[in-house]
Image (cartoon, rainbow, N blue to C red; front, side, top):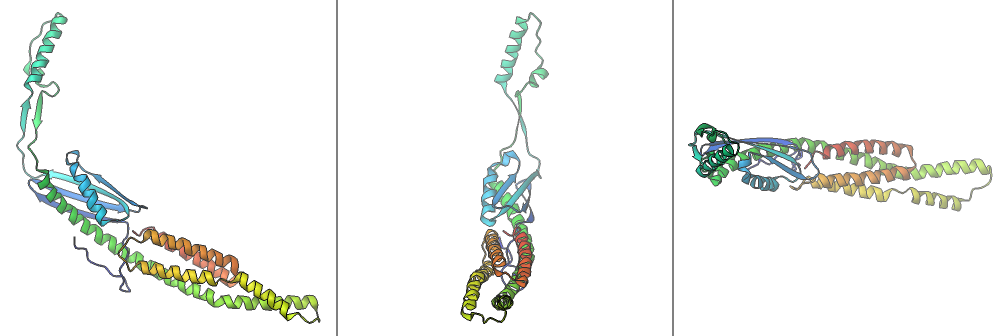
Length: 305
């Protein structure tokens, strides 16, 4: 199956969307196969195959091919088969069964002391006396036709998921860039937080002690304690790492949805920690914005394979 490689706006590979639709048709050996497949979001891979019972042997084969091409999503497959040529059908009589019916009915009539007259049409209507025999089918030849329809459906399905995935990839990468820019603002602001604290501390102490000379060493110690407690350097480093890994995931051909979901959880954890430690209005406002954007990214990731 030759699926075109679709590139995003920056030239990188794009993720697959979990939603998609494909349809394939193929004919041969007196049959026309129509196969449709559609997919919706699912945490794992679930394949549901609906086909006529007589072709049940195809179900496992179809399922295995889907598993080789799709990693996540709930896939529903509908297989419709029509005859394109008239088939020679024969009616078979179960002679032993009809004779047994006749004998039993005679015995019943004698037991009930009533007259019994054999009626060939009534006997023929009894269960399993007449059986319509279908001509033998070469299921292997039919599978060749079925697999052609399946391959065609998979190609259309893959292209649709790739095109939708390219839009999702563009949106997510754009939001990750926005997150990086806002996190850079926090990093730039973090040093100022300590300076602002030091200034406020000096002002408050000066009011309290009046003209008394401040103990600079003690005040420096208090500022150092605050700086250590309010330090968000580790959180910023981890955030940068998570963003880098999230972008790198799009450069692979693997299923990345669950990995990205984990990364979003970790980023949200780090941002919450920054919000609780920073003790700064400007950083708090940025944190609120970051959490809002992360939720939008998380929603989009739910659509990625």
